[in-house]
Length: 478
Ligand code: BG6
Image (cartoon, rainbow, N blue to C red; front, side, top):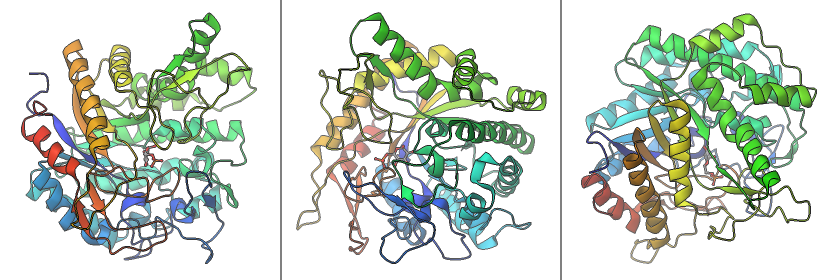
């Protein structure tokens, strides 16, 4: 049997896409609260303040804040061994600069954790999942200012201390490598690019990589701090891992695929696992005239703050072509250009469906780092239909998940140390890239729609019952 006995089957969410209650109980405004809804073809808008003419999907989202007991009961019914969620920085420090944390925010996560503990579900907690206090964006231009390092570490100290004994698995930054893309400016780094389209932000490479550097330092400091507070803490990185294939076997395509994979998928893991910048990034900086101030002290901090495990999201793969005449018509998820793979089918949102790519990724990552791996996001965004009798038939989702689990099993047989798998958006939530509700990932349906209508009631999809069997049989029945 491939899956180890203590394998962490479960689901994953993020506060800004799930919690709602954006201004309740002392919560401050987060950058995510300033991004309007969009569609597959119409970009979300980053606004300077809350404008009446827009609907902001994070404000209500699917209201975990008021449904946490019901949702956790459903997770328990499905047999979840683990649940990944994020703490919203602005619930704890509304502006980011306060001396004292907001007790109501802290209490909310205590309630969530106690509920999980009641059902024996292991929390996997993201400290920052695209949730930067909007104040820090406006005042300091987000992570481009090194001041954020101390503010983040203060926030970490508060939650590491408060939740000691309740949480073992932490992740410092969600998909930290989003910062290698244009879209990362506001979403992931809080750089103040307001009043523009989410998918086309004013971009300054030097500023963006500088901001990323500050996140690396903050992450390493958090790892060291966490270990000093509780030696049981397992603190991981979280990378959006998209393997790049050469579009043809032309050496130039192979080289390009390697370069793209290095810069977008490997770079951040290399820093966070190995504790130093890889040579190819230093060369890239030099070639592009990017000057990043990396002090000796920073180098020391990075080398002393290496993560305990490597967590990643996996959705799709991309092809790279060095040929100008080849149409770069690849996925449109969060930017990054690629070429569609003629051997693969794609989702309605142009994401290439590639289960074997997951086995490739697992082997590549494990080969590179040799530390435990956790898949903390995987799934398919699809249109679902709520039938009159409240059922939802989603064979496409079952098929997607089953085929990816097949490849996980093979990777474990290959020798990869994989410790967990949390299905993305296990309960329907807002899409990060398009801001839609229509793009659903859940095994639990939420009655909520893009025009803001819906009564938020929950229904089990067919995939819920299927996943329950998978977990019950520890992956044998699928
Ligand atoms: C990852 C993010 O990029 O992918 C999530 O960590 C996001 O926040 C998920 O929701 C799926 O992407 P999308 O754009 O379909 O919601």
